[in-house]
Amino acid sequence: MITKNERRLKIKTRVRGKISGTPETPRLTVYRSNKQIYAQVIDDLSGKTLASASSL
Image (cartoon, rainbow, N blue to C red; front, side, top):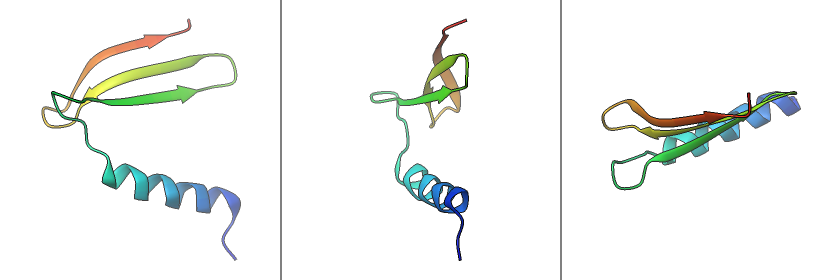
């Protein structure tokens, strides 16, 4: 039986495989920790982070 965490990771990799950021429409990633929130705008073609922000 697949665990809840394994199922979440499987869905995450499937979705991430379909999404790619371009210079016209970059990819937005958001990470939420217990205390902070972080966001990045990423261009996957050049492999660079265009902008980042956090609630620090």
